[in-house]
Length: 257
Image (cartoon, rainbow, N blue to C red; front, side):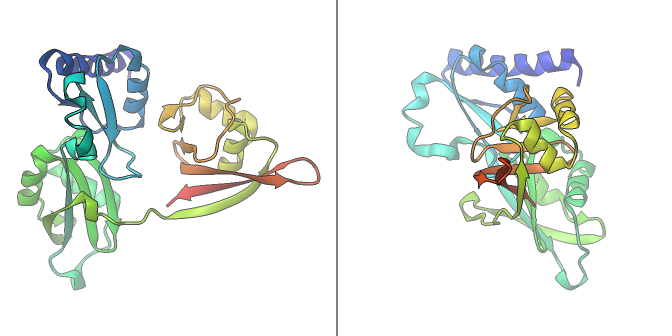
């Protein structure tokens, strides 16, 4: 993504907030990836309204921003995340006995084949033979009418209430010993690379902490920080549990599965 494109994305955020403020109406972004979310955080000082982020469920990676004018903030307070135009669809095989084992890439590929832009699709979660798709409300009916096959597996879809979405996020616990709770030290543990190489990941803009681009290898990680490393995965830092005899720190991290 070039700088010109980044500036256009940021201008889109400020334009949406100003439109909401000027017309006294709610406006929304599309679903945003980590890079786009980082661009948003860089211009929050220029946002003219209140805003919220949500992707359909607690652990969503791709998120939508809603811009709320002050005049509507109290009226919408009780609605919470229901103000987001996000639909949840569940697709499953017509004949489960003959269904293929489908991956996230398979489901996404089938959606792209329908001509749907990636920005209109949120997270895709798979639970056995159930394929859950978070999408913008405006394309939900189209997907239900059009998505009938994923690879060679015939599927059928239905709407599901987001409140009933109960796929439990699975984690793998990683325990280790590091020199400190600095970000570069924890990255070295997670990637099995040197601290110098870990610092390069940060310099190459491949590391995000709590959805924001990491800019300093000296950042001191805190409990529940969410760390994303391109090419390696996503993690939750669970904190330290004491020191070894040599003064090194015992840490625990949950890796998203």
